[in-house]
Image (cartoon, rainbow, N blue to C red):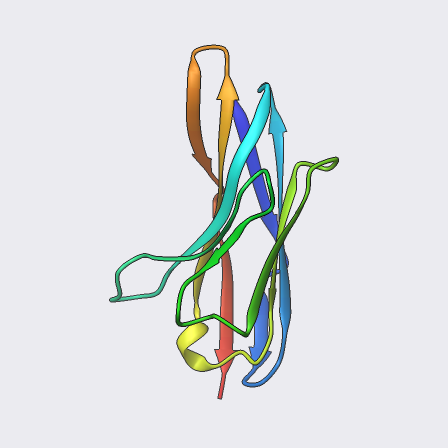
Length: 119
């Protein structure tokens, strides 16, 4: 099994910044792509950003230029630096990791962390 634990969410004023962290632990050979997606009330789930094991990144258009995803492979941790936050960024943020285990490639997600941006 693999556990993903997120931290760093909270309440912030519009224009402010937050940094989310997500640490993976458990039994696996390697971690491939890691990423973040978010779910706001009444809206579809949105893939926010991803980073591959080779550190190639992808961002949703809605966050491009404001959010930065990074990872620390030694710590099995992915980060999401969020700047210039606005009310549209209010959501529960979930991290995920695609890991290689004995039986193949699996995807795990965290429990989510709430981000609330007040205007």
